Every structure is written in C-alpha cells, then in structure tokens.
Amino acid sequence: MPHRGHRVRIDVLGTLHGEAVGVSVLPSASKPRQILALLALNAQHIVPVPVLMEELWGAGPPRSAPTTLQTYILQLRRRLRSVIPESTGVWDKDVLVTRHGGYLLDVEPADVDALEFDRLTGAGHTAFEVGDMAAASGNLTAALELWRGPALADVPHGRHLGIEVTRLEESRVGALERRIGADLRLGRHREVLGELCALCERYPLHESLRALQLLAYCADGRSSDALIAYKRLRETLVEELGLEPSPRIQRLHQAILRGEEAMEAWNGTGRPGGSGALIG
Image 1 (cartoon, rainbow, N blue to C red):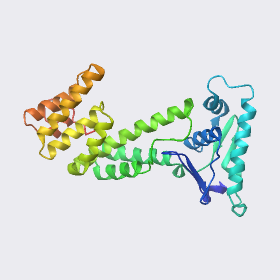
Image 2 (image 1 turned 60 degrees about the horizontal axis):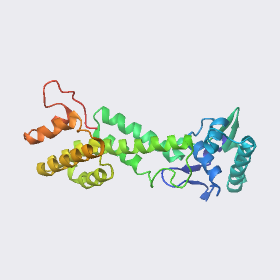
Image 3 (image 1 turned 45 degrees about the horizontal axis):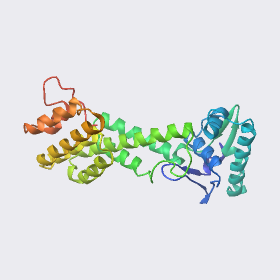
C-alpha cells in the first residue's frame, strides 16, 4: 500500500507511545487512546465496531455510542493528518482505514512493539524446541528488551484491552522462563542467578521459576541454597494455597537430596521412564 514506506510506530509494552516522523500521534483523551491501542494490537486486521464500543463502554453502551465512536476516529485521523507530511502522498484514511463493519490500522506489524514481541517469542520458542539454545536465548532476549514497563500502563483497560494485557504479561513471564532455561543449558548459571532470585521474589508461587533457581544453584555448586529455596517455595504454597509443590519439582528436590544430577532429574532424563522434556 502507498504508505508502507512512511512509518507510523505504536508502542504498548509500557506507556502508550505513538509517532510518525518523530512527532507524537497520541491523542490526550483516554478513549481515543484506548481505540488506538486496540487497533494497534490488531494491526492490519479489522476491529469490528461492536468490539470497539464494548471496549469503551462495556456491555451496555449508550445510544450515542456509534456517533461518539465516529468522533473519536475523526480525532485520531486529524492527529495523523497534522503529523504526516503531504509530500508523502499518504493520507490519514490510508493509515486508519474504514472497512465494512469496523476499522483497521494499516501499519507494519514490525512497527507495533507487541506484535514484534509475539514474532520474536515465537521464533525463540521454536528454536528452543529444536535444541538451538543460542538462537532461543537471542530471540527471547530481543523480545524481552522491547518492554519498558507494564503493558499499556497509562491507558484504561476495557474488556478487550484487559484480555490483551493479560495475554502479553503471561507471555512475558513465559519468555523469561524459556530464556533463562536456554541460558542454563548454555552454562550461564552465574549470569542468571541474580535475575532468578528477583523473579522468585516477584512471583513467589511460580514453581517453574523456582525450579530454574534450584538448577542454577546446583550448577553453581550450591545445593544447600537450592534446598533452602525449595523449602521457601513449599512453605509459601502451603500457607497461601494449602497445596504441596508439584510432583515434578518434588522429584527435583529428592534428586538434590540424593546428590543426583539436578538437570537430568528436572528434564526427566535421569530416571527410568523419564519424559526427556527440555527445561521450561
């Protein structure tokens, strides 16, 4: 399309940021910002009008909602028009496109940080599954570096943005877990120990992160610290949820007590009938 050479960038992994030719395209009002964020997260795909209205007003939008939504779209287009130079031959309607039943933000997925994050994490997970730990660590590190804080930290969340923010935050933790798992397999246990300690404090009920901490301690010759970390996990799970740790991490704990190879116990390769699963 004609505007593809003219970049409009939208970032949502932190506070909302949007610019063209180095000038902000963000509106000041909260509801147009919600619209822009939702359109960016679905770049090059139509977002139906009912979805946009539900995002802004919930399940019971006012009768004036369709007209008000059109006003917000016009405000966004006016902002784009004020920024994009006429010499580019690109018009605001080329970027924020009206389609049957909805609207579409026609920007490159690489120019929306959340979509680039999804692409890089996908590549990282694929590399991990085929055993290319260097590529896995590299792609996942690049994906995580796109984050500047909590997703859409300064934008109200309706139903649809709330779902997207939850998905992105879960994906972020999953990418962290996988990247650390890849780094451990690359022998980088000392580099990741500090990060793991901080993550386990932030997510005290996250068993897989705690298991990676145990593995890093063991790789560093600190089995006693690994046992203390397991004890903290168990106490937290029992106190907060009334649950014992999962059978898999219990097997890891027993392997550490017996002085067996912790990595093999976690991967399931050091006992008969093990699954051979990779870290993470």
